[in-house]
Length: 174
Image (cartoon, rainbow, N blue to C red; front, side):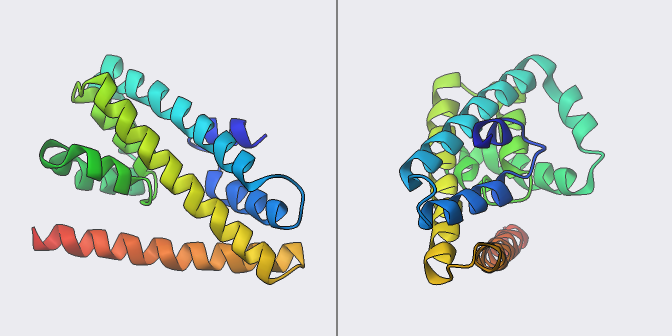
């Protein structure tokens, strides 16, 4: 199930991954397996989105940009991918829809596949590890699954907001 959720960019990957981290903390599965499965799903998804962007070009991005959050992500990523492509794709993972938009944009900009794959692999591994560890930490601190899930989700929302704010503030300074 985690692989499928990680594979489809419109499904709630972060919440599912947090829950699997909580389950790993309480002995339901191995944290390493959770991270590996989620990373594999996100990596396959990124490659498919990259191909869509490469062969569908801007038409796919234009269709997606009707959604406000995705349009904001496209605006932030578009100029930065040209100057600092690898770090931007890694950081984009932490932004709402950033992984999806980054993969589509890299494909539409005709980024070399090997470079994109490397940046994507680093980004998805760091992001899935971060989210799974948040769930794991919540599951270790509080043994009640529902409460530990809420705690982990709350921490993820706060950290995600801080990262998004930092990126937006940095974008205004440029």
